[in-house]
Figure 1 (cartoon, rainbow, N blue to C red):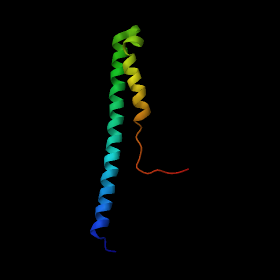
Figure 2 (figure 1 turned 45 degrees about the vertical axis):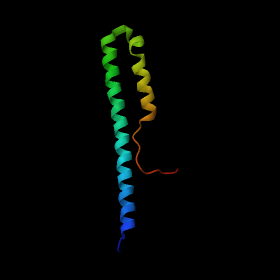
Figure 3 (figure 1 turned 120 degrees about the horizontal axis):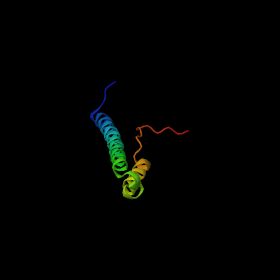
Figure 4 (figure 1 turned 120 degrees about the vertical axis):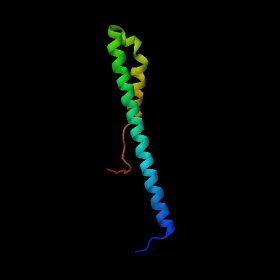
Length: 78
């Protein structure tokens, strides 16, 4: 089965788009992990005042948790 240049280019573009999507998904997940680590440090250093001092980090962490799930490239309808 011969594959012409257009089909080969389409397959290559699809694979590159898939890789880019997964890479961006992992970058967002790692950013979330960094925010979580900073939140833990802030809570340990602030002690009893961590509810007030680290609130902005906690809010940022919750926002990132909602948006940065690692998702695959396949969508399965149930």
